[in-house]
Each structure stands twice: as structure tokens, then as C-alpha cells.
Figure 1 (tube, rainbow, N blue to C red):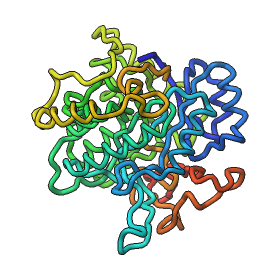
Figure 2: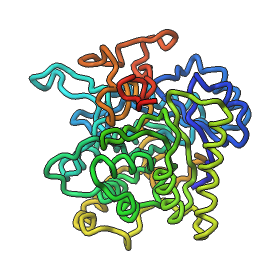
Figure 3: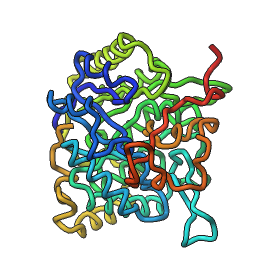
Length: 385
């Protein structure tokens, strides 16, 4: 995989500061907040300078029971083309339920909700990802999310679930180390075990973000400085493989540009120190059989058959692009609040409506143009100052 370098989440509130920041190799923009026919001038200027822009989708709901909406997929593809992006990213989550095929009205969760780590849920997720791969002109990477709960009857750990997902679909991974920390605090999961089990060679890039703990619950606010435990997980990951890219997410409570630059420098130094001590280098994409967990091994035959059955021309890039093409490049930016870590952060009026049908200003009625609300903005979710 080609190296992306160090980047930051592009937000309108810090657009001018991002343009002036030294050492910005690439940026990530919330796909639903970008209109292809009216790209922000700041993003255009960054593109002219050769800065890579990656659209980060938040509304597909790839983990839901329904197949991905064609209009949303088309809108994400359109943004990838308009931005000249080497890949697009989304989340391993579901965001809505109900609708015409059920006895319930369509409901929008307002959060990225965790997918049960069961084989049935994995089957649905794999098929939805294949559909998305077919519809997109560039490779897709999917992100692990933060959550407050674990589903009963789960059959795999997060690392095992991600390993089998990659093996069966060839999808790449966007690993959010802040979400690994969130799930450690909230669900008792071991970040080191997750890194042991997931296919680090399939990582497209890494997210880093801040949050806060209150009453024993970690809130992935994206509105606070990156804490040391998150940097420690980043160090662990970078000691195993050099991530092609690392990106700092900040969605609210924006500090002065100098403070963001210091955080970026810390992230960059963390990766460089870990890789220099271990001599790790970027690895080729594709799962490593020797690291397969027992749970994954049980379905290896099925995964191989699934891959072999896929037609050679999946999407514009084809199936080969999903497993061997080299791109040059959580959640956070959900259209309707924070990513399932703080129940207080649900925006008013989002429930029971389809955000695709809510035009906002210049975004018009494009189904993908949902406003991506800042995370951690609910006053109830903020720690005492």
C-alpha cells in the first residue's frame, strides 16, 4: 500500500487552519457533507496542492439487515470521483431499522450501532460490503466502531470478526485506535488481543481521537485531546506494522491551531518512534494464514469459495483492486450525533426520519447530503470543567 502519511479530519470550522498547518499529507472529509457540484474552496485548494482527500461515509449502514441503498452508494461514488480519491471509507455498523418490509416504521438510530459478532450477522455484512464494492469506483475500507454494549450470544472477538470479514470480501480496514480504547473501557475488551487477531496487513489507515471518562463509561467525544492510553494502542499497532496513514479526528470544541499542530506532531512522533524501534514497514494487503484464529479457521473454506465465486470485474476497480491494488491513501463524523458512545448525544428530531430526505442549505436534496453533526456537543456529555 502506498503511504498516506499524517492527516487530519477536514471540518469547515477549521478549514483555514488546516490549509496553513505544516506537514499535512492528507485529509478526510465527511462524505455526506460534501456536494460534488459545489466542493468547498478549501478542499479544492488542498487538492491543487496535491493533498489527498478521502471521503468518509457515515450513513450506509452496511451492518443492517437491508441491502445498501443504491442512491446512497451512488452519492458516495460521486464524491470519490469528484475528489479524485484513492479509496472511500465507511463503518461496520447499522444506523436504521424498520421500514416497508417490517411491522415498524423506518427509524434512524442517530448513532453508529454495533453489529453482533455472530456468523449470521457476518454473512449479511459480507454481502452488503460486496454490493458496495461493486458500486464504488475505488477500493472500500471499513471502520471498527465504539460502542456501549455487547450483544448476547456473540461468537467471535472483534479481531476474529474483522479477520474473517477481510478474508471473505477482500475489504480493507480503517482501524480506529480510540474505538479500541472505548471498547476496552466500556466492554472489557483487550486492545492488544484485537491487534493480535485482526489482519494488520489489510489496514488502509488509522484514526486517532480524544474523549473522556465519566462514571466508568468512556465517551468518544472527538472534542477532547488524545489521551495517553489511545497513544499507547497506536504505539502497539505501529510496532506490528507501519500504518499507511494516520489521521487525527476532531469534531467539536476546537482548540487553537497551535494545539492541533502539537497533537498532530505527537501522533506522528508516536508512529515514527514505534516503527524505528521495531523496524516495521508497510506490508502487502491480504490475510496471513499463520495468524488465523481458531474461529476464523473454521470458515476458511467458505471464505475461499466466496472469493473465488466473485466475478473478475467487481466495480470499476475489480475484485483484484480490493485485494491487491495499491491506493495512495468512525465514525466520528456521524450525520446525527456521536458514534454510539454517549446516549446523550442524540440530536433532536433525528429519530424516525430518513436523513437522506433532509436537505440542508447548498446540499440540496442529494440523498447523501446529510449534515454530519459534531460529536460531543451535548452539554450533558461534557465533563465538568
